[in-house]
Amino acid sequence: MRVFNAHSDLFTDIHYRRREGERNVFHHHYEESFRKGNVTGSIFVVWTDEAHQHDYLGWVTGMLQSIHDEFKEAKAIKQVLTWSDYEEALKEGKIGVLLGMEGLPHLGTDLELLKKYYYEDGVRHAGLTWNEENALAKGPKFSGGLTEAGKKVVHLMQDLGMIVDVSHLNDDGFWDMMKITNGPIMASHSNARALASHKRNLKDDMLKALREVGGIVGLNAACDFISDDLKKQDLEHLVIQLEHIVSIMGIDQVGFGFDFMDFLPLEAQGTMKPPEGLTATPRDLLGEEDIPNILAMMKKRGFTEEEIRKISHENMENYIRNIIG
Image 1: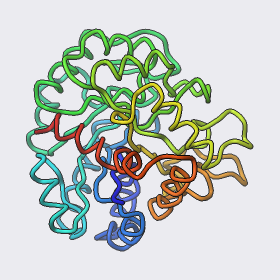
Image 2: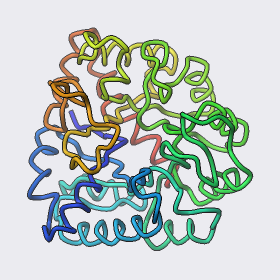
Image 3: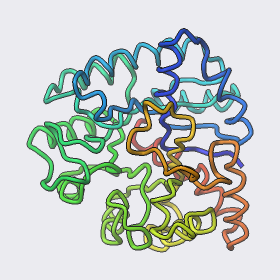
């Protein structure tokens, strides 16, 4: 069973390692794990967090250089610009990677810069914010919706054929997005707030709104997105989250967006570092090589082979094909 993971921060670690002189990082550190998990596609993001706020643009520029160099060296991954690129990656036995941006604080209100990222760098996905407040939108700890500039960016993204991601928007921004969207919206790595109160999880009415616009949700494996109860932050309760999301979204609009974090260097983890003795995701789902464990749990809890196939890759692939063409 092949797998598409709609959210990975892997490029952050690759950038850190390349700055220290390593080359062909994916092959040396991650290819085996991806092969074990049968991951054939993913969205790898340029992640801008508050540690980079003194120079967001400089950080992103440096990351993009590392990313392009890595794409040239890593024979196992292929950058996906169009759907045909993804199909070619599958035929060649490569992992098709869409380049995304998790937050756009470096953009300011510069629409031409966004066009540059699309046409020159091949960016095909973006969320307006990470957890910060910027010129476009606000993260979960702030109130207030999209700015006028943010609305213009959303319209430009959709005109270009980019995936618009709401997983880091606050509630006000989410509902503004639902008012202005002219296409399907992705929540690449969010769960249900009905089962875990994390502010980045989605309320049931939000899930329904995404369903109505043809959107999709990627299941997030982060422990505090699974349950508020430490004893329930395990693989079974992650699948219970999945069951709840499917009960609202339907079987065709849910996929995976695991958000694995164990590989991140300490300097990049910041406030996401789990308490001592705990792991960021369940111990039997720490990385791509463990993905067969969640597929087995889904089967154990009654998902059919067809349903598992849809959630593991078909739904995300259909969604992406529809957006990027």
